[in-house]
Length: 227
Figure 1 (tube, rainbow, N blue to C red):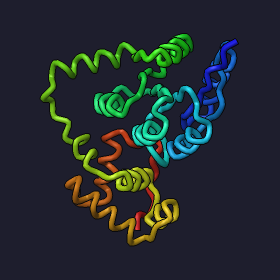
Figure 2: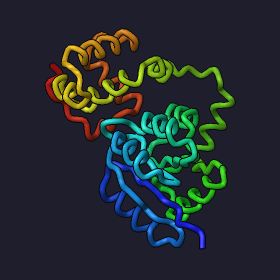
Figure 3: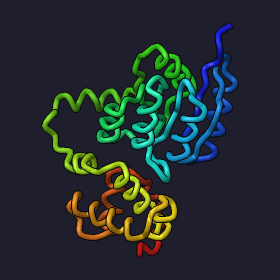
Figure 4: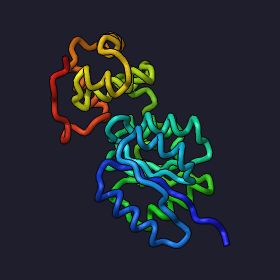
């Protein structure tokens, strides 16, 4: 008898994690071994659990899905990562495909679609929602289309991306310093470098940049004192 396919679910909505976990656990041969509600926890759980498949959203707190995918792929190249998101923006798709995800589904896909995608990914296939496929095909017909915002984002270091994410989530300089175990002056220095590299002249524009890029969900963003 073959071993169950071990799965880690990453989504910041409890009801999504619970519902998906129940769906997969009821299917023979699939076993959910963990759940994570943010990108940082996803990386930590992936390292400790070494699942066969990770099903991950993009808009996650603490560390967005794109950065989490990159870190997980670096240490667990054999683990298959399937994106399950409500977002189908072109810059997401390209960055995630470049990062090495095994497939990209949308949250209006059925449970059967998700289960088929898991098995397809383990066969080294690339399951894609039809809408995602259309975006990829369209991009090949317009290869010169400008993607200035994603291009500027790619210039950032991993730590600068972390700081940008936390600023965009509304954390104060002190909170960010505590979360990253650095001084407030270091955070301010990173913020200055961010504004210089992204050609922005205020912390507020940093937040707008991150929202426009899709690093955080504007519907759940709440500003705090950034000093």
